Length: 363
Image 1 (cartoon, one colour):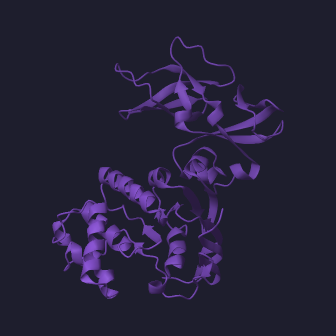
Image 2 (tube, helix red, strand yellow; image 1 turned 45 degrees about the vertical axis):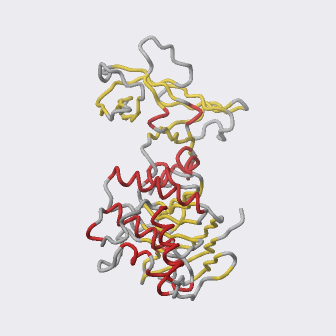
Image 3 (cartoon, one colour; image 1 turned 90 degrees about the vertical axis):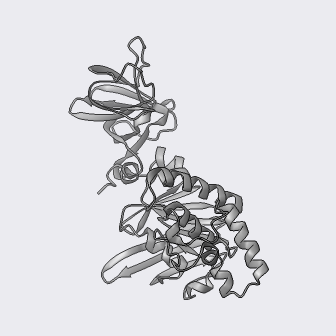
């Protein structure tokens, strides 16, 4: 992978607090990369090193091989869109979008052409003369995006830009933004703590914790093949099964969970006797039908303790021994939810095994 943007062993401290602890990350040109993690993990601090609003104490930040350290923000050509729209309240939509072009002393014809392109791209046609207070939150956010992109930049930085929007509008705007990013091919770094945003928008996700990157991968890798328990627990709902490997051969691995054998397919690396933790997503489990004959090596028995009807799925809480499992059943019955004793069938191809230190990496 050729790196267009690169963070090399970046360190940033605030007094005695280490905000970034030797962080390294390579970003290819045209990728949509999300920095995902809980509050205080360092994701915004890392983005600010690239934008020029903060400087690393150690390490380098490079764009297309050029070292950015020490350059002021206005020389980096890396516009940053914040969650607060930061529009000029006394300016119209046209004036807000064209502000950077005006500072660059672009001609009236060029300003009109570029602003027209942005209005069309972000579905803002007809709103040119409106002021921010006359617009909805979603429209204001689109203006902020347009203002950031009107200069024709190659990099766009987004710091939780959708957090002030309601849930449905957030989905609509993120879909539009992703389509535009793909169309323009602009390299984008997106900061969020929202796992749904990260999974739905990204080419690459970097999960951060305590100033370090825990895992870098595609959304599929992060969700179904987490590097450790922290990543598995932070990205989506998950069940953890503490088990022991009872058999390991070329055909796969068998683990024992409360005396019930579970067979994982070939490619799972573990040795007989190893204590392991299985990562089981709710959608990797389904309730066996009353007349269904469950497959061997993928079955658990339990009792439904609670459920939540979510429209397209029913989420069940099923007690197995002293533990409670969460599963999402997409086979919603018009007669209502099930109850009582049930058999759980696991899709063992989607299970993920954590060993030793990986399983313990939640502290």
